[in-house]
Length: 185
Length: 185
DNA sequence: GTCTATATTACGATAGAC
DNA sequence: GTCTATCGTAATATAGAC
Image (cartoon, rainbow over all chains, first blue to last red; front, side, top):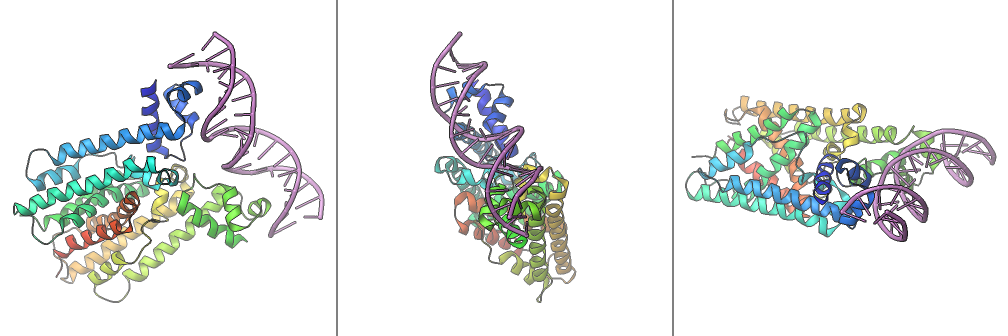
């Protein structure tokens, strides 16, 4: 039951955010009763922490696998950026950034902060590797470029949701790859 | 009073989103009483529509002024991207994209959708102008590039909030300008 | 136009039985 | 571990007086 509670909370946080997710909704989706939920967790913030932590770990593990995978640095970055994503659902971690109650709670906030600071640094390292290997021109700064690329993904979700069209997300990624291409080889 | 109600709602939607904003909070911030609010507006959705519409119009007017201002196309785009923004507060329109109740209501959703579809098209037009005038290389597709650039801004807010550091937003913009620079002139 | 009173439902949690 | 009962507060209005 503990497991279902966490998974249901992850889904609801993704769909509706922290403020928009009630204990009751979690109980209904997970099939757990009132008492069960408060037996396993101290309350909504405690349960949310478990859910957020897991989503953050999952996101990071996936990115790490792609960015440390086989292929040249630029190929790995392209693979990471081009990975199929559910654009209209958005990013389960990035979304929390808009949740005032999450950002106001240092415990809930930490996994979000760490995930993105890690991701930006990791991507910057791969870009630096590409530059060192002569695959990337010397022009673009790795750290700034990494932040811009991660921003394209996060902003791509925003624009896709605004348009109610996943294709807009794909277009944002294409645009970023097109800009990057001018600096490659 | 009608005016204060709209302005207070705009602020609260920006800070806390639609789900996180209660009629009571609006009344307290605006100084209006219960009866006053329900005299001027039919309810929370009606008031939110007025607030969202105004924020959307403001955002569009500001962008239009910059993108249609003086200077070469690339200079205007650079000016638009580099404009000082309150990175930690984020975008008052883009933020609504994460609000399930806003996206579920066609009336509330429309201003959000229109603002971004207009912005992407307008930016694409300026990029096409740059290309036609020989200021921008033929490589990058104007529409995809425009979407990517708008995404950098929207995603830059996400990353800045995640890091609780406005500088991260500036870095995302720098990264985008750096990538764009390789295709200019 | 604004105020106060009232109503209904949901939120977020605790207590104690089983 | 789970269930039911209960609690106090907040959300989102409506009604009617002034």
